[in-house]
Picture (cartoon, rainbow, N blue to C red):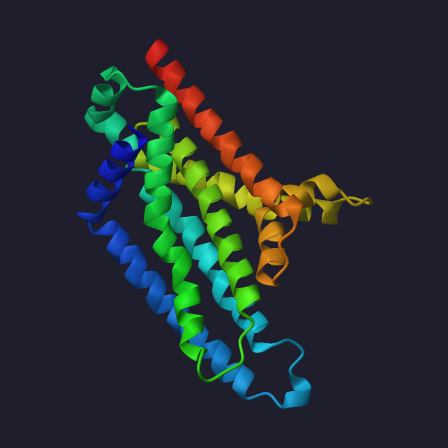
Length: 245
């Protein structure tokens, strides 16, 4: 049943223009950043290069891709629940003999499949240098995994925001607000006399950074896994409460 839900979401999304617009626009932006990094790195003397080409690319191209996906995920998520609430389509799903957890997982996996091509764009761009430059493929793999995990977190947050309202625009605003909060909450320690390691741990970009430099830590995997599960459970709870009232 989850496979049926996933196929339904993916097919219905790809007949619309939004995924194609996001994919095309993302590639244009990332290609421009990629060329800028190559031009800047090529202009440096060997002694002036403090990091490798691979690390320069992962920090810039993959890092900026994360920002793009952070804005793209709520746009793709809004049609999964908010739009269906608005036009009444979700009432048909809720009336079917399907567990709500199956609905949530089906929509989440479908959304993640839609976002995955955006996660692969940085890797595709960087691999254009495979035959002309020395690349660290282990670091590229770590950066791609970290970007995909961050995208999964964005998808889970976007899906939860979409479950809160029947207004798609409001759902996008709520999702972006939560993601922006998770982006800057680590800066709270700058306003205190002590180091608030909890706030730093709550910031998704701090965990992504370690992946971008080629280090996969258990704490980073635990962070993404915990918050993905947390927001999916919130979504399941919200939908259950909505149709039990």
